[in-house]
Image (cartoon, rainbow, N blue to C red; front, side, top):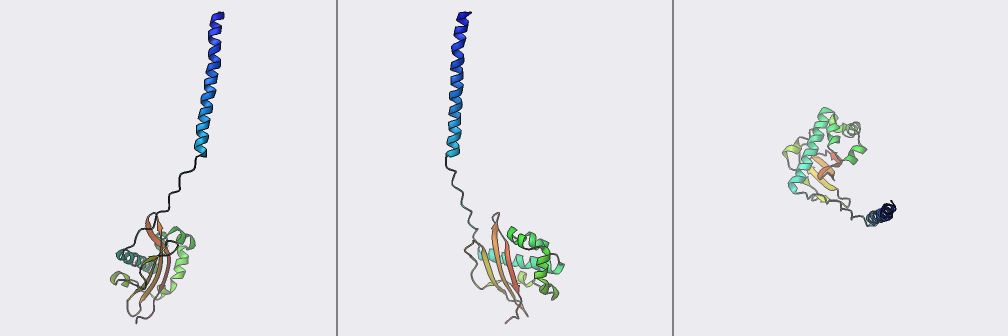
Length: 170
């Protein structure tokens, strides 16, 4: 029995020492991983380029959506298609109030579908990365002046700001 006890006893201390050594090594690895610098943040994707045809599309689709909202009195689609920041600032009711004059006058923005917008400045990004589109559509007897801004959301340009005027055509 004594020989058996002697053979077993030295194995336990070695086994315990091995477990402690392995657990300390695992802790060091975890700590090294925690202390290692975080990977560099991926830069925000740059806004997609805008061709003249895309700029025309953005103007036309925005004005035609606004036209549908004015005709129906329902501004939820215009709001829902816009950027989240625009949605946070404007309820559908707010948009209805903003465009009440166009709606009361039954001003038809359908000319946006037929005539190409004429930009006062080339489509450009501002310092915040917003796409700025300003110009007019030469409808008669009143022109359609627009000043639109768009924000990239999930890789797509979405409406961020809108101003419409309808001065007499020259």
